[in-house]
Image: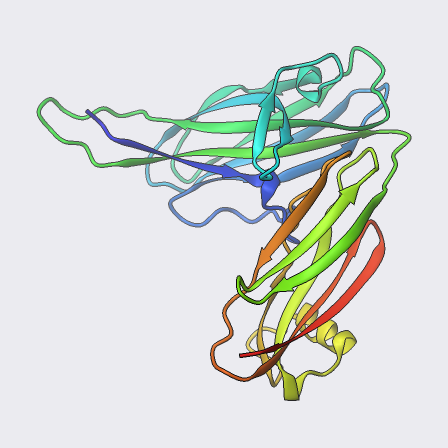
Length: 281
């Protein structure tokens, strides 16, 4: 019997600064671009499209499904039944199944047509692109493990009036776990994200938080500022309307004993956030 491994990629949980990039996936994979959609809805239909890439060396079959969803207490996707105001009920997708040759791409079009007036705030859907197996093992042969992909694209559709009202109650550095923990309460009617960067510096070389933000956001290829140990993007997992969540960003390890500065520069619903944390090892 053919062995199948299903690899689940939920794009809605991994929105980074390049979430809208039109880059194709790494070789040997199935990918989708963009990895997230944010749009406004009202009385008129809204049309969008996604592109699926097959960079495998063989033809594959893709099925498309759409669901209503939320995030549970662990920030994992939880599917919900459809409702009158759920976006999945208003969405027409074409095609919903297709065969994609190796090295080719396919455009999938979607149209949002609410039959009722959308209530103010955010309406969500998740579009799953599921790869199906197309080959079977010959009689008496043991087929290798086949890696299949299931990609999720989060769709956020906002209806006026929109209220952004998230607040950061705490941003702490956990030395034992080498993590940043952001406690966020969202009292608005659309999701919010903590957007920004972190950087780790040798204490003696720390240039100050504003200079640190500029040096790490510039991202000059092949050059690293003196004393910079590591830098990266903050975890941009969304905090949905009416939810309070702790968003954790895992930092790379500090390579040796000594004194360091962890610097955080970001924003939440337009509010600037700057923090520094001295660390001794």
